[in-house]
Each structure stands twice: as structure tokens, then as C-alpha cells.
Image 1 (cartoon, rainbow, N blue to C red):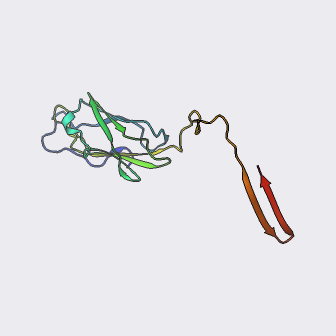
Image 2 (image 1 turned 120 degrees about the vertical axis):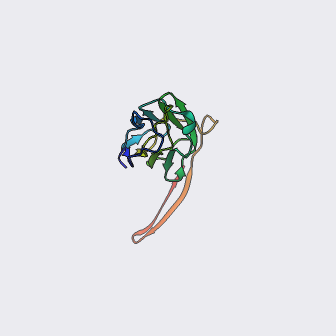
Image 3 (image 1 turned 120 degrees about the horizontal axis):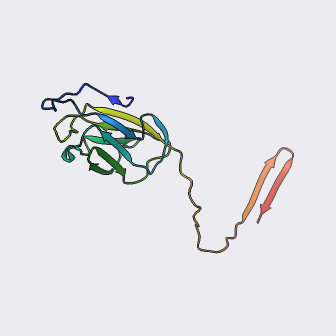
Length: 155
């Protein structure tokens, strides 16, 4: 939804100074080529009440539904670490509900942002066999064509 509040918020019992807001996010809204093994970080305008951050109030959703992971609250920052790498070239949404509150009981207006993961990651080649050499042979390719028969043998 463009990294913006979904409503004005303002639930009863909010802080008289004002509501809680999102200051920054990683990844940014509408980001593309996001690393598949990265974390999601949201920094708020005030210190967060740890009890208000749950899998229901801070959701990361992908093509297969809710993403499993660990939520960590440290001061004004909430970090979500997925249990496994995100899917390749997939769209994800981060949904924050008004149940997230500061220590002074200020409520967050509902907030949503979206991003897309990259197409994979380059890494060091991995040996797939303990053998020092591998014999490879491909035998028999016969093709009938209008001009005759073509056959080959590779070893």
C-alpha cells in the first residue's frame, strides 16, 4: 500500500502526545532485488512495548502465506528474521497492526509495505561428489530426417 498508514489510527487510550509512527524500514517500500536471506527491520518513533509485538501484529506475508520467523524488539526497533531464505523473485508484504504500542501506550496506525526478492545469490561452487574425477558419457542419439538418418555417439 505504499509504505503508508492504512488509517488514521488513534485507538482509545493512545498517548496524548500523539500516535506511534514508523520512522524507517529495511527493506524500503517497493524495493526490488532484496536479498533472500536478509532481515526485516522497522524503526518506530518511540520505544516499543515488547508484549504488543506478536505474529499477529507484525506479519510478513509472501506467495505461500505467512512467513515463519523470529521477532525481536530492542528499544524502538523490531527485527523479523525468517526461519529460511525467502523465495526467489517473489512479492512480500509487511503488515503492521494498530495493536503495536509504545511503552507510553501510543498506538500505531495500521501500516503496510511491499518488496520483491532477487533472483538468487551467487556463492562459492559446491562439490557434489567426493570422487576426484567423474566419467561422463552420453550414448545414442538417433534422428530420422528427410535427408537420411543422422546418428552420433558421445563419450
